[in-house]
Each structure stands twice: as structure tokens, then as C-alpha cells.
Length: 122
Ligand code: HEC
Image 1 (cartoon, rainbow, N blue to C red):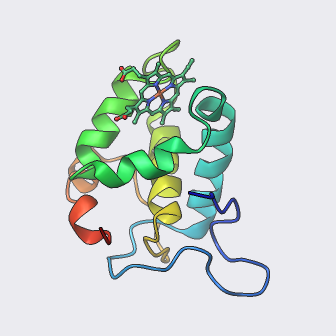
Image 2 (cartoon, rainbow, N blue to C red):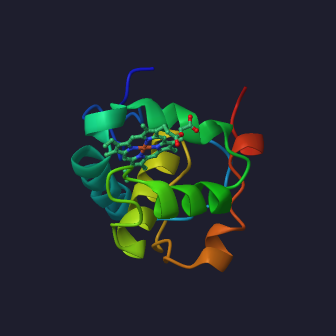
Image 3 (cartoon, rainbow, N blue to C red):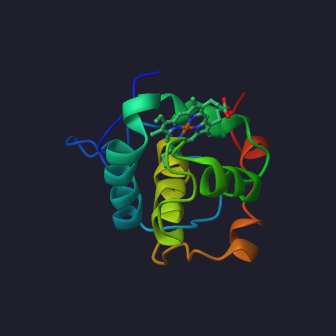
């Protein structure tokens, strides 16, 4: 899949990824921060593939647990909870989750409630 790097909006005003019907968990600024972190901390090994990979996870909590304890593979757990949360926001945005007015906090209890796979189109 071609990654749309400007996750917020394309220049013609059309979102490049269709927005799905889901709660707004994060802001577009947060997703943009996460995109920059993903590019600097993850893309050297993964390219854009994790954008698609996250869509196979049932819940954001499992995914967050995995990345925040195992990744980057050469520095597991080396980023701050805020950075992992921002990266999560970016990956959700890149899959069409809508942005809203409030940031997603680095709070496992909240992150655990985010469903992913069942909300996305097949
Ligand atoms: C130095 C290389 C490297 C970096 C940097 C890195 N990873 Fe990984 N990642 C790997 C390797 C190798 C695997 C496969 C090994 C495994 O599954 O345990 C992997 C596996 C994964 C998986 C599981 C893949 C799947 O198919 O389910 C996810 C998700 C992931 N990485 C996310 C991230 C994120 C997010 C970051 C940035 C914070 C990151 N990785 C940074 C090397 C890297």
C-alpha cells in the first residue's frame, strides 16, 4: 500500500485514506508527531509496513505492549511512553481512524479500550 505521508489532509483537501467510523482517539498534531518518530525510529527497518501490520491486531493495547517492550529491536523499550503513544496515533490515522480535539494519553487503560481490527474494512 502506498503510504500517505501527510496523514492529516492532502493538499486538495481530500483525506487520502478513507476515514472510518470510529471514535476520535488522538489529534492530527499528535499523529504528525508520531509520523516523524516512526520515520526516525522505525522506518529504517520497517519502511512503511507497520501501517498495514497494525490493522491485523485486535486491540491497540496488545500492539502498544509489544512495541513498547520489544521495539526498536536494537533498543527495546528505548522510547518514551509518549513517543510510543504518538506512533500509535500515527498508525491509527494512517489506517483511517479520525483525529479529534484531544490527544491520546500514554495511559494503558485507555489504550486498551481501542479496538482496531474489527473496525477496519477487510
Ligand atoms: C533495528 C531494526 C528495527 C527497528 C529500528 C524497529 N524494528 Fe520492529 N521489528 C524488527 C524485526 C527484526 C522484527 C521481527 C522480529 C520479531 O517479530 O520479533 C520486528 C517486528 C516488529 C513488529 C511485529 C511485526 C508483525 O508482523 O507483527 C512490529 C509491530 C514492529 N516491529 C514495530 C516497530 C516499531 C513501531 C518500531 C519503532 C518504534 C520498530 N518496530 C523499530 C526490527 C526493527
